[in-house]
Length: 498
Ligand code: NDP
Image 1 (cartoon, rainbow, N blue to C red):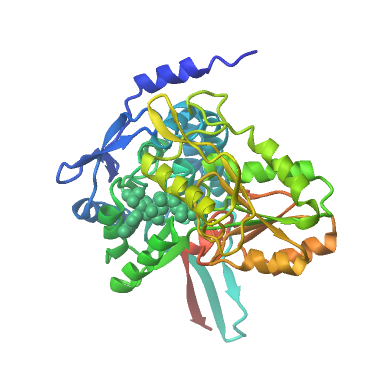
Image 2 (image 1 turned 45 degrees about the vertical axis):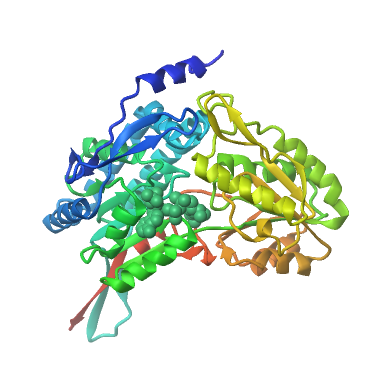
């Protein structure tokens, strides 16, 4: 049976949508203190989705006070973990109940295909709140081996007021990666979404209140990075700041911390992830399918996108042919159409930037085998035909810099050692993938690659229970899994002399 949620259904929903677009502070929707707003623009229509509160210093101060007050009051920070659990579970259910609206908000804000938003982002967000809800009352503290004269208790406490600053590529999901573990650990949270995609975060906070989260425990401050983001980074009463975004801005948060109160800073930054395909890989069709997915999913706007494809010379031409065929399945189209697999890039500026990389690759002598055209569909020129470059050398910009778009650079190698050296020749170390049917090689290469996650015979493997994060200039600290709780809690030693 055909789904009734077709293009006309989603277009009608988009037309009727009236997004909530104020800041969410202390359990209430509020305008920015100075009344300023900014426009959230839909990249596939060019139209304004909503005028959004443009928070700055005064709003950040207000929200920090509310967060601190709620933290000190203890209704959330000191409640029994069993009481946190049903609130987070109810929030997960409310996210599912409002899936259409939430998916639509992200689709309109940043051009992600509605099918991905509905079938991947929203369910993953709900699942993450469920996962941390379940974790709440299953964590035990420690008793250290202190000898007969003492009892040394090591207990985990919430850090206090936590700020989260996130990018636009997975607006709702990224919010959950920060907010769910921070709340599960008992903190009060301030969330600044990216200026391109603020709407689902505001709705998330409303739903959290509906689920029973006390006022002030989750606050959302839409606004610009240089205003709201910087004010959070420099605020003297924020204890911890968790950031996902570019390496350049991540470094600024370290400087903000040093210049203010030495708040803990956790960084999930950029990547240029290598995908190594050895000639002994038995299922080259699967490898090609995943290589195409790894660069086209979310229009290539994924920090861990497999943007460098390293192929053993003996299978190079045959494998590239297969990848080309698979990439042809990703044709740009209206994100509101459920059949679309590749939507728009986030905005015209970013599309131009990605296209500039493609021109640069051609100028530097790489061979553009397919794609790379900037397309106009309807009123929007934010569409890009996924680009496949061969003949890429490690010194070229398209092999070194994070493009954050559907641009795949193929490099050749002749030996395992050369593949590893090439893969590690990057300032980044977020993710990597290896395709081989030799067990020993899989382990050997996985050990040698400097990356937070190495996927073997798949790409970009991810699960709520498995840590995600990088090394080198991809950042430090881990999102997801119980390890994320380490960022949002601190250890207290209570030493009792007996
Ligand atoms: P940015 O680093 O530009 O922005 C991220 C966040 O920081 C946004 O909320 C932004 O606000 C804010 N910000 C920008 N400038 C400042 C500033 N001067 N002071 C304080 N805050 C600031 O990244 P993008 O949003 O462009 O996202 C793309 C980047 O994110 C890519 O490099 C990608 O690799 C990385 N990323 C990493 C992930 C990971 O897990 N490692 C996951 C997803 C993305 P505003 O939007 O208002 O500018």
